[in-house]
Image 1: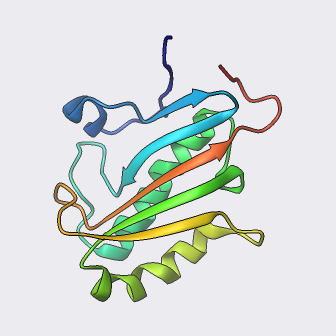
Image 2: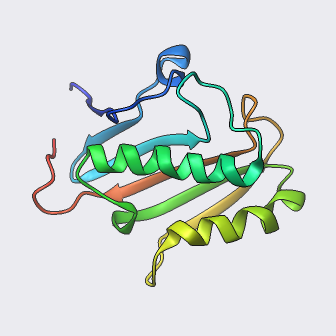
Image 3: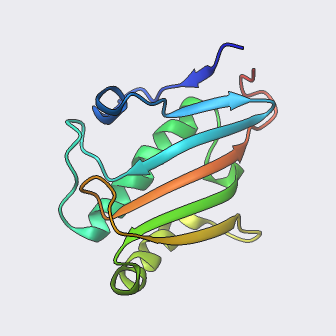
Amino acid sequence: MTRDVVFPAQRHALYEQHRYSPAIRSNGFLFVSGQVGSRADGSPEPELEDQVRLAFANLDAVLNAAGASFADVVDVTLFMVDAEASFERIWPVLLEHWGTAPYPTVTAVGATWLAGFRFEIKVIARLPEGAAQA
């Protein structure tokens, strides 16, 4: 099997630095790697809320490259460094991007290390009819 990789138009340096694909299309689904608030050079956005917004912008770029949007997301996994202190700051920013019900499933995980980042979002989306699929 050849992986059907999806790259966003403006990809950040982390994909090459850490040798992973942004997303893989398979059987009508899009499996998106964890997206962080990475600038183009791979460095983290310093402020937590801005880092979350940039992570969503990076996620949206990957989804859009596959012909999808956050409305097509069915499963979300959130990773947060110092979740107890971060969650209340992160959640209002998430709601800026979350959309309306019905919502995707979500799992929030506290992490001790995210390679210099404080937030990461990983999703699985169902590709809409007409989106290029493998």
